[in-house]
Length: 78
Image 1 (cartoon, rainbow, N blue to C red):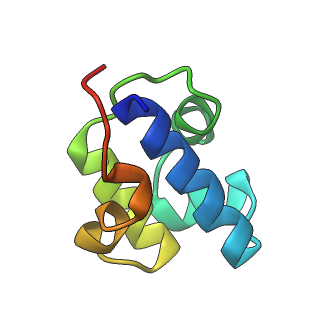
Image 2 (cartoon, rainbow, N blue to C red; image 1 turned 45 degrees about the vertical axis):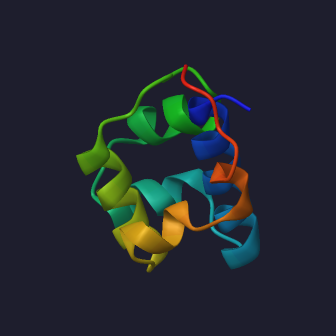
Image 3 (cartoon, helix red, strand yellow; image 1 turned 90 degrees about the vertical axis):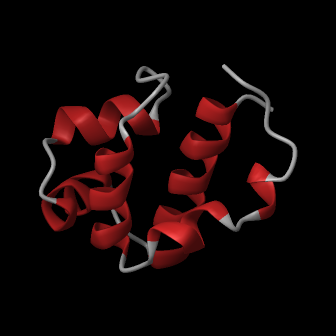
């Protein structure tokens, strides 16, 4: 799996687990809706680390917790 796909799937899974909408995630993360939408739907292939940090804050998790998911075990470079 490509890294960008793993990031996208991880965000989708966390949103489902927490029953959170894209709009709510954008608000909680202090990011624009279009930024969150682009990552969520795979239009943004390489989001910046600071953007992922904001998303994690919006989801109430630590950045290291985001990457400890099994999705990232065997990722490939984009």
